[in-house]
Amino acid sequence: NHPLINLFLQYLTEMKMKNKNNTVLTFILLLVIFATNYCYGQEIKRDGNIYTLSAGDLIFSISAQTGGRIVSFRRGNSELLTSTNEHPRYYGATFWISPQKDYWPPYPAIDQLPYKTTIIGHKIQMVSQTENMNFRITKEFSISTSDTAICIAYKIENISNKTYKLAPWDVTRVFGGLSFFPIGEEDKNINISSIPNSFIKSNILWVPFIQEKNMKAQKLFNTAKGGWMAHYYKNLLFVKCFPDIQVEDIPPQQGEVEIFIAANGKYIELENHGRYITLAPNESTVYNEKYYLLFLGQNKKEKDLLSIIKQLNK
Image 1 (cartoon, rainbow, N blue to C red):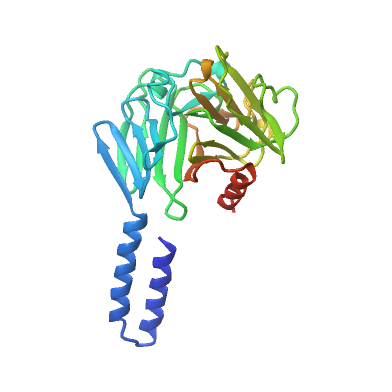
Image 2: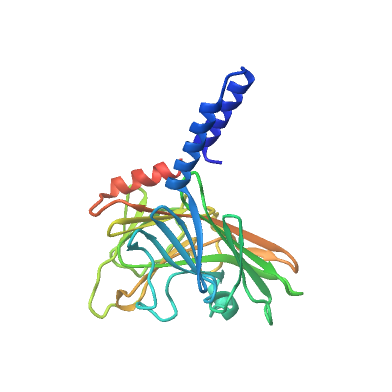
């Protein structure tokens, strides 16, 4: 489904209809396919319980042993996500059920225990354990051929005989850098922050990480707008896109987006919540996201970062 290949296929069809000799064109097409696969080709590899999606220098790894958790997302040797070096339990990127007041701490079967893993074509599918559980979580990961984004689908199924109110909750743990997202509606009950150095500029809320001695944990809640948040760390620009929701759909005591800075600045959590819904027995909901990771180099200005993100969202 690469657009360049589709263009050549269309051209070959036209030549055939005109009774043209397309032997040479067929050979060219094969070369294009080979070159395209070489440059953009995707791979799925397994190393024990770690499954890795890759395309060129883009590397994305998930642990089937540890809750289907994303444990690495990098360009070449430049890593975005934290590891057990920063925290023995809270590291990498994971998926929880929201709101926190009802579903905390996270169920071990969802966040820590092994997932059953299947490779389906170019897609990795992971399914949580269901023993003594009210929910089943299915995670699917793939790479978009059009823009090399990581496509993620998180599915929550109610496998109990009770009705629950809940929302999807994505948690991505990164190193200190510059976090930002477009501001949403003004709501004094939601837009709350204990991060002292955040500021608003060009309708974007910016959170530059500042390391302080003996700093306490800090948290920011916001309504957001546009369905994305980003983080710039050293050479990397991370952008995650998710369904934009209305204020009335935000789960109670949460934000549409949240930023959590751990004590002493050990790591930062970039969090986003989906719609707060009622899930009856045998019903399910799917939360779709895209993760982009771009290698930009250091010292990019705010306007440059926003310009790049604008191109991604076209």
